[in-house]
Amino acid sequence: MLGSNRARSASRRVAVIGAGIAGVPAVFTRPAAAQSAGSKPIKIGFMVHRTGIGAVYGRWYERTTIAAVKLINKMGGIAGRPVELVTEDDGTDPKRGAEVVEKLAVQHKVDFMILDPIPMNHQFWYYQTGNKNPDFDRRLSLYKQFATPIGNVKDTRHKACQILAILPNKVDSFEELKTKFEDIKIIRATSPLDHESIWMEIFPKHISKGFGCQWLCNHLGVLQEESIVVGNDYNDIDLLEWGKHAFVVENAPKELKLKYQLTANVIDDGFAIAIEKVLSKDIISLTSRQARDQYL
Image (cartoon, rainbow, N blue to C red; front, side):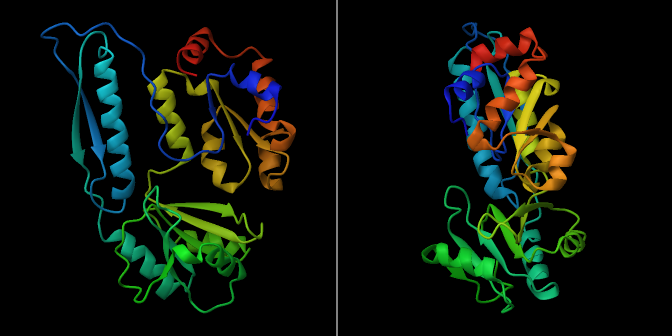
């Protein structure tokens, strides 16, 4: 998103920035003193989704965490002590994903796609009700070679990273449908294809951009109060609500521009301008600057 020398320069001066990015944060570690012989390990509990609707995410979380622990130990551990990971499967309900899919198709007659696990999420299974849905058809045509129709809606127990329902631009209908699902995360997004249709993105309850940024802050030892976040659509609301200094770009929906601080369009260096606005107030502490120098 940084398109100028000013943007690149400003990006070097920030502690932690959330820029509308979801998923597992990168892991950074600090060199530690060499582990002393016989040092007792620091045990860290890790609840992971090895089964159930969150398994597709859990697999990547676990791999990333294991890799991080190996790196930390290779670099000397924490204060000379090795880290030991203690994992437990939290047993998310394996039936839930199929129940959601059946509810969308049978009860609410919604067109949807079930995206394969990352990094193969360009592949998907899809279900069509037969109702007119130009935006759904457009996405289907773009990814036709990667799309597989669902023959029987009850046969939908596939590993997946998310469910995507494509709806007409009727906010009231979206909000009503959202109330039918209480134990999953539902995020509204504007279609990047026709810029009007509502994309209803369905994830496990714990998935959000704000959650990912909080994890990163905790890991780097950076205060949430010193975070800067930039969004451009409804699917950034979790991130914008989490961040201390929240901005939306000029081309964001009107409702968001009325609620959050405004910066320029991304092609006009909006990302860098937002950073400069915050830094000009001199609110970033020495601790976070040290974290920046160490990790960014």
